[in-house]
Image (cartoon, rainbow, N blue to C red; front, top):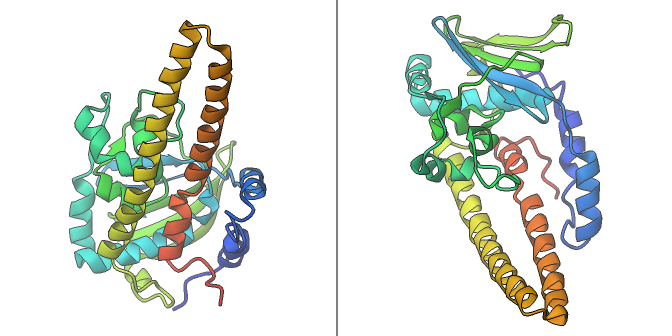
Length: 278
């Protein structure tokens, strides 16, 4: 059986040339990326017993079916059965209080470091868990917040052993888009060969490289800010102006780095949802 590729061509078209020559045409690419970035909202989650846990998806929710069916396929192969996968989901903690230092460290790989907030809450810490069961399991936490089903919705129902994908509009009207059993998913063709462990390894490797560069830029910005403050105290206007230019350059470098993080794109690539150019 083949997985319904209703959205796959649209998906490939969207990302096919998005990052081509991105650093050669750095400035142009950034503005194009910002303009083209999708904002299709939705929710995803799972049902175990009487408990339903859902999480908001801020972007690209129309592609949850393509992504999560593949992730479920990989997860079942990793854990060995639906029952063992359910046990893993049951271990996900429902977090209500403010995150502690240990939580911040554990979830750093999933954190939206572009957030303007200096105090990271769970929404920022679990930002890159949106639309990914693999990341949610790896983080081990889901934010307990009132979230209504809205937009494109993907639900993994362990009680019925199936998944559902539908669209729910503002008036509450539901349009069913896809549904299938977990058993049927394991028989789908064109599923990715990559393992769960390899996906996690790829994610950690890319984050380590990103975070090393991120930390160095932040350290340099802190150093320049100190220089600027000292120059201001000494009324050294010329020095302050020169430092301002350096700060602007580092701010831009940080923006380019953040745009190049591409967590979502990298996951699509791991799941074979990106066209490989010859």
